[in-house]
Image (cartoon, rainbow, N blue to C red; front, side):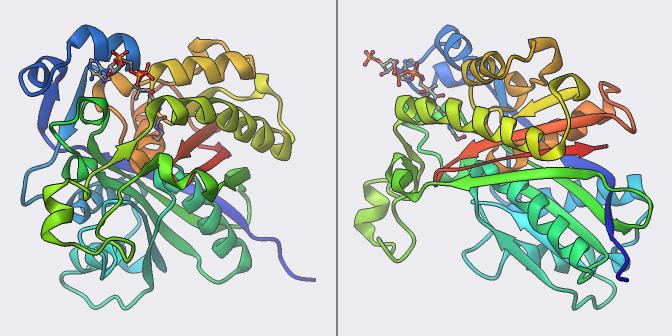
Length: 332
Ligand code: UT7
């Protein structure tokens, strides 16, 4: 009889660039106000990377912190997975750049690849990592969500530039005979909404030209209100489905960690799921929306701040471009 393989979450880490841009700073760049941004989104400030600080640099620092917490050595990692929509380059993958940084003194040659699911990227990543470990293919996986959205932001467009930030979070997962920390995940996508949140140029649809640069097509374009309207029901659906699949009840979950895109979305989802806000983790005021890095950096902060402790059940819920959505019920 084949042995059932469980998945243990060994630990997490995160890293944010040092530079902070506040709403007051943005008032000097575009026609906006701290009051508008705060009441419409909940965001007060965001972290912004330096010109020569790459997504893989943030991923590297977050990974080092996760490695430190778990006592895992880089050479014990069997697979590196990076969820990002802001890779260092189109290719090679940011996961390969991260591998190079992690193994500067030894040759790794372990597999590494990126996955693209926008703000749901980390939930997609957990699902993939879990499946790989449970299949017996890989024993220990480094999963990272890393973004530098500031570098694909149009800093003259007030409807988007106030929303996004940079950061990275990492999780190390490993095969276990005794623990099974990922109780359930649920994923969804609907490509018919692809033109509501996207970066039009740079790919095969609109290869880079002087015109694509001049018309700022290499930056985030979003129909915010429409995205908002779909985000709430889809996050609610994902949250309920993953919970159902886990066999747990709302009361069993110590903390809900929703994607931090808008405080009003977070509150609406909590209301629809019947969760009181004191069980919902919020750090949007400090980070803004950091896409695939959001849920993992929030989880790491919740752990480090003592809000949740070993053995607690947590539900991560996300929604993003694609559209994609997903949720995961995990034990930390
Ligand atoms: O992470 C992936 C998923 N992304 C999201 O979930 C984002 C979802 N969408 C949102 O969070 C919200 O739709 C936004 C925060 C983007 C916008 O909030 P809204 O309440 O939907 O505002 P709106 O787009 O309907 O704009 C309302 C007004 C407009 O002015 P008029 O036409 O009413 O005169 C905008 O031009 O607010 C104006 N506006 C601003 N005013 C001051 C838009 N951006 C700004 C700004 N400062 N930064």
